Image (tube, rainbow, N blue to C red; front, side, top):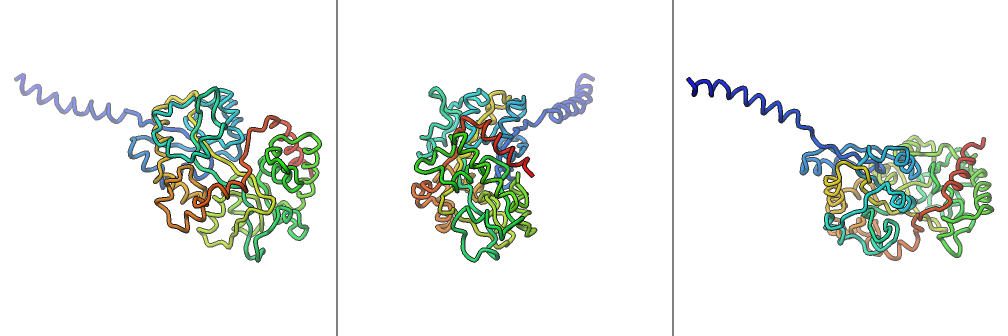
Length: 355
C-alpha cells in the first residue's frame, strides 16, 4: 500500500517541480545605450549563453543619458554606454561602479591608445571599458554633390536652404566653433570656449537655421530624412552612412578640411545595478574580437579591440582605419569633459528656440 501511495504522489511532485521551474524568473539585463549597441545579431548569442534577457533603451544625446541617471533612473539600468564627453563626470558623480578588471580578461586586448586616456579613471580606479570609437562626419547625397564637400561651411550655402540637418546635440556647437577657427592652435579649446567665443558660435548657428530642415535626435530619424530626400547634407554618424548604404541610397561620408570631433564610447556598470555579475559578463562579451566585428557590421564604427580586424576583409580593415589608426585619429578631436556644459547647453537651447 505504501508503495502504491508513493506512485500516486509522484505525479503531484512532478507538477510541483515544474510549477517551481516555470515561476523561476529569467534575469534581465537592462541597457541604456546608443543605437546599434543592442542589435539581435550579437545580443541573441549572449542571451542564449547566459540564459537571460537583454532589454535595451536608446538615448539620443549624452545629456539625455546624464539627465536620466541623475533623475533617479540609475537603478533602472545595469549597463550604459557614455561617450567621452560625459564618461568622466558620470564616474566622478558616483553614478557608475568602479570595475574589477580581473573580471574582464579581454580588457588587455583593447587599443593601448584608448585605455591609456584618463577619461574613465578616477583616483586610480577604472570605471569603463572603451567599446567603439569614430568620427562625427559630414554625410551627403552623392546625387547632389559630385565630389565630397571640402568644408563644413557648405552647410551654410544659401542654395541648400531647408535641405540641411544637424544633430540636436552639443556636437553642433563644436562644429560651428571649428568653422570659426576656435580650435586653432589647440583643439581642446572646443571644450573650453569662452563667453565671447560661445556668443560668436551662437551667431554663426543662427545664420545656419534657414538651411536646417530638421534637427535630428536619433540615427533612424536622419536616415529617414535622407531616404525621403528632405535633406542633402548633415553632420551624422557612420551608423547612418552604413544604414543608407544597405538600402543602396547614394550616400557619401567625409571629414572636411577643418577636421571633426570624434567620440569614444565606453561601457559602464551603473552603481545601483542589481545584476553586476551578469553585467561584467556582458562587458567581457562585448569587447571580444568576434563580437566587436559584429557590432562594426551594424554600426560602421571602429572597434576598440584591434584583434577584430582578423575577422575582416582587407577592405573592411582599411575603411575602418585599423591599418593606420594613429594617422586617422589625428583628424579627430575626441570629445572631452566640458566643465561649462551648462553654459554650452544654454547657448544651444537659445539657438534652438530662436525663430
